[in-house]
Image (cartoon, rainbow, N blue to C red; front, side, top):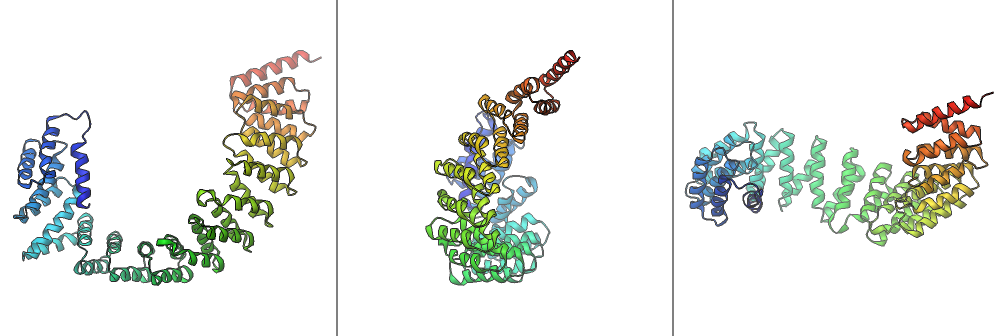
Length: 491
């Protein structure tokens, strides 16, 4: 944890205590910690040590111990005591929030002591790193990365090359990414190209992508995206191009999306173009891909990318595709994503027009589904019209189904009741089913009404069947009443 963050975290811990925490030890700790904030290191040492002696079981015992060690380190005249203090802390408070920071400072102090000629501390560091204690090793890696000098970089590279632990090597890769040194970037590239562990290759590639400011790095990513034998690496390279600063990777993504032979890689490139579609050039590219690409999957991905474009800039382009594309599946995808954005009156009108006038029933049914997705119910009134007037029975049935699925009011149920009188038997059956699938608070009374009073026996039997599927006591009562009435009317 960086020093600034240490102070922020400690300040929150010490100064913003729970309102009910008015205990004596809490007040003592706050008083002692003020000396840390004032950088009165000797007074901090004395008061925090006294706090530890008198409050060994306090919830703040680990905080006080850590900050006493820190104050001793800042005094700088007895670093060996500071080292011993941190060492004691890690043994006593291994589960503390401060444990990782204590280990990092322990390494830092040991390095300072070794620089003073006390070589036993260099041996201590080596012993800690070879002890199998991952926390200590990670602390050492963080300490080296914070130094940011050539020797630290050399040490990190040696650790990566000699340590077989993947967790340690992953931490080293992150630390290398923090160096503003060409050798660190070259090491990351070498890992990407030659490391057998795919996970480590992907981590290294991510950090290379974070530094993709030069043409050399961009070309490196393009080569990986086009030629690497591992699909995961190729996809990661495409993502890295999409994240390049200043959208420098966008032209390369367009090229990959346009000509690459691997369909999966092309799909990834199209997707990330959609996530970056802030300007007209990218939107136009996606539209042209959706309209003209000979691979239906790619065109469909372009449609999705347009639907995800920032500020809904892609929706007008989706409307054109939904109305005129030659590929049925592409049109259906465009209509689907328009249905996720039906807060626009223009889109509602377009979906209505497609549902009512489209010659292809599958396209019309997709528009019906899209209308059913409106959050404010604006599409239901259009579905009423389609259910009553559409020339195709299957489209009408779909409209009736989705009215039932969205039925929230007596008006919706009354409409479905009226559809049980429709001349088409398929529509009548679908209306009963839709009522049965509606919320029982509004659907069950209508179902009972059909079962008792509808003049069409086939429709009555359908309603009775669905009443039998209900656990509601009203359904059981209605069925018993129907049985009794039927027996009384029997000759």
